[in-house]
Amino acid sequence: MPYDFSKRHPEVHEETFIAEGAHILGRVILEKGVSIWHNSVLRGDINDIIIGENTNIQDSSVLHVSNEFKVIVGKGVTVGHNATLHACTIGNYCLIGMGAIIMDGSVIGENSMVGAGSLVPPGKSFPKDSLITGSPAKLKRLLTKKEIEHNTHLSRKYLEVWKAYVTTGIPVFTGTRENRLPHK
Image (tube, rainbow, N blue to C red):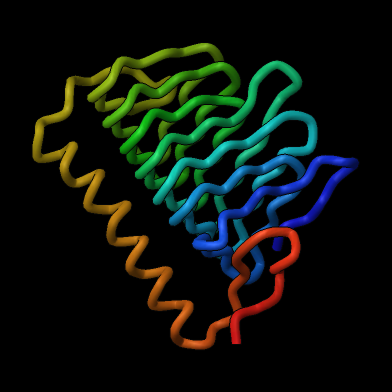
């Protein structure tokens, strides 16, 4: 559910899916086709969170900002279950694995994949097409064209899934500040 916080208001595109139990707080911008899944928390309380088109933030993920850094997530990104994105930038068409942690000031280049359970320390930057794994995370190799296409496929799949949820009558939230009621 979207919440205002101290004159900071969410901006939610009308074609966006927010599952019951998710919390969107403060200045969080959700572009067209975004899906935020159950029990995820996006806290734009002291800086902005910007989520690009057709990105999915899966169950129990946490996105939070710092005074110095926003969270910027590009378009077509898949953020796996229980991931933490703290004051970082994620390029377009990335896959962030389940339980991954990406810390303040880090930048993940477009078309990259961060392995499940990886820890990206503060201030690390990785180029586009990277396979990033470990704790601390390191560049293992560049992704193949097939792996990059898989990342794009995942974001399209989640777009279809959330649209199916809306038609089933399961309580979800969409829209602008004036439209925060469950679908009927």
